Length: 120
Image (cartoon, rainbow, N blue to C red):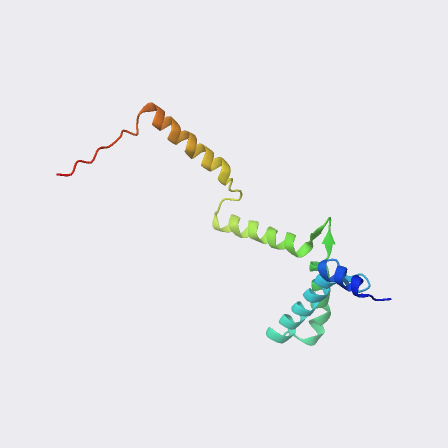
């Protein structure tokens, strides 16, 4: 039987909440959104609706604890960054450490001379 406690626990874990047996809330929403966008917005023929439904179900599938759609978006992001020539991995901590070490070395070697401003 359905209880309020069950609803609360299902609502908190929306990604794993099952609407229909073996269909999570994420998959259900992706099926609705992809079908509405494909058929409604782009005027795709109605016979393509099962394709949008299958794509939504597959995109919302959880594989090794990660939603397939997130992995696909990450893949596309890397591909686009490669296409435009942007760096793939940016390690800000390593860059900051190298700049800080270089600044400390310059300060120790005396390249940063104190400048005195005389007004007069």
